Image: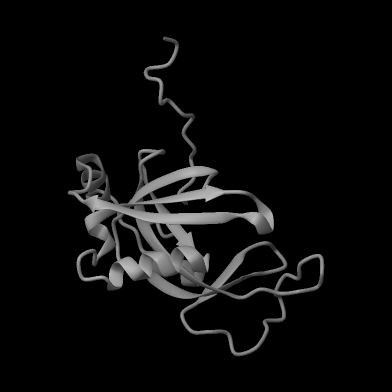
Length: 166
C-alpha cells in the first residue's frame, strides 16, 4: 500500500472547518458565540453580537445587487476528517435548527457530549444538509489533549483578529 492507510486524505492547513460534499463529522469542544455578519467590499467578514441596525456602507453586493447579513454561530470543534481542532461557523438555518433541537431535547442536551455528522449534498441553491447526532460518547483523547493545549478566543471574530493567537 502506498499510503499509511486506506482512509488517508491530504490535510489542509485551515483553522476553519468547511462543510465538504458528503459526511462531515465533528465533536463540539466549546460553547458557541452567536452574532450577525456580512462580507465587505474587501471580501472580509464583519461581525457583531447585535443585529446591524442599518445596511453598512461597505457591504458587498452580489451580482444581482442584493446584500446579505446573516445570523451565525461559531464554536471550536474536533474535525474527525482533518484530525485537528478548527472553528466551525454556521449560517445555514437547517443545520442550526437541527442542532438547536438536539440541545433543547433533554436526552441529548449539550453537543459537547456527542458527535455530530452533517451530510452535505448538491451545490449552489440546490445544496442540502442533513444533521444527525451520534450517541453520547466521551470525546477522542487526542481532541481533549490538543484542545487543552490551545488558547482559542472566539470573541476575536468580532474584532476581526485571529482567535488562535495568544
